[in-house]
Length: 284
Image (cartoon, rainbow, N blue to C red; front, side):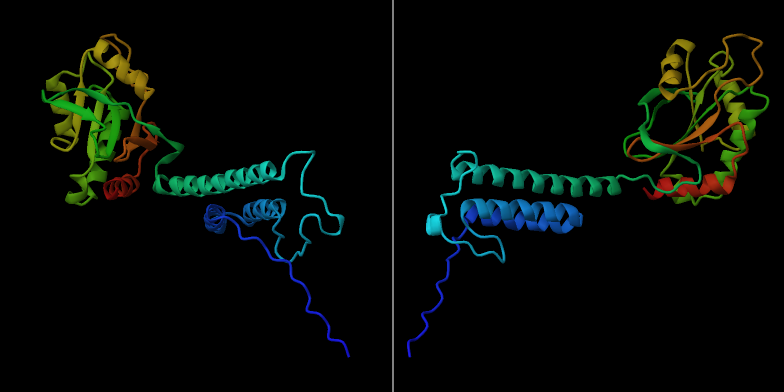
């Protein structure tokens, strides 16, 4: 009784070390990506193996030339060129996967914290604003690494500005001293004519903001680029312009110098809400 010859096995060529390392990196990236993208990476690697002569997983193929099978080519292009092109395509897919994961991680890392104010759809870089405060000292907002609450006032305002100042003071009353020290509270004058140092001191004292709010003042020429940078309409340059017709809002700026959201000055600002947002800014 004749013995059955053992079945011949087609050896699978070992992929080069560089290709195996790439496959491992691609597999790791695919594990962090969506299933669809993972399948795309895997498919590209299988294609590269098949074109090189190594069968795909679960597929057994005779060697080149066996049973009339011609050497692998596509449209007359040498097999080596096809293999390199396939590997390049797989590399691009893996790179796209890795970048996508990195970008998603970056978005999470820089996402805005939850606020009770009206949050902007995306953070906006705050203008680098420098000048002189009513106390004669230099002022910069946002200062590097310091969050800020920025508002736009004038001392002779009969309605909106006193309301905003009172609400800011009430919010600061609700914030622990340690958190207050981490956040700059700054008012920017919208009435250079009326915001004299004496008027500003009176305004801050009346609303319990002395030592708790810095107040940027200057000439109209000095402040005009500041207003434009913050998107503010100032009071008219007229001695009888007493009615509050300027842009009134309270802007929240994080430690990275980004505007995250604001409160409209034309409607009441709940002190508890503003206090919560100041604590959020302080927490960084």
